Image 1 (cartoon, rainbow, N blue to C red):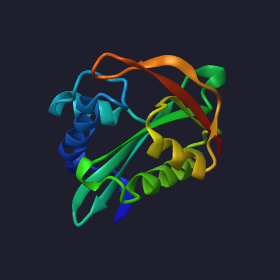
Image 2: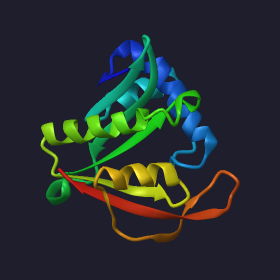
Image 3: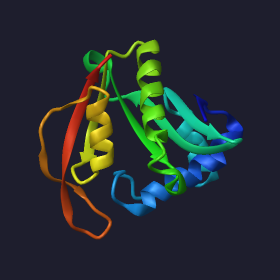
Length: 159
């Protein structure tokens, strides 16, 4: 498996993986799925998109972009998505490590996650393993697909 910058011909596979996570409704705040037009524009609008490729197939991806503007523009934000059929294979770890390198290369000083769902134990364990610091807990900050609310945990990592 390799992690590399996305290419235009990756977008359809990226959309499928992204939409899978959106439709699960337990990790991403988005409720609307992407189509070919909105997906192309969405991924093109990011500061950087990386994909995990295995055997010529995209199995995971991340997006990287500023978390804010102006005096806070040195703080970036990222989201990660791995195909459900390939989870628990350390693809997420490879994506996060690559993201940290690219965030630094692009001049960001901090990578911040605004809304890690508290029950997403695998992601939280990975972030903590890689040196991210939890900033606290926001009670009932995320509405799950079934309508109940769960806490979110903001994290950051200096670059």
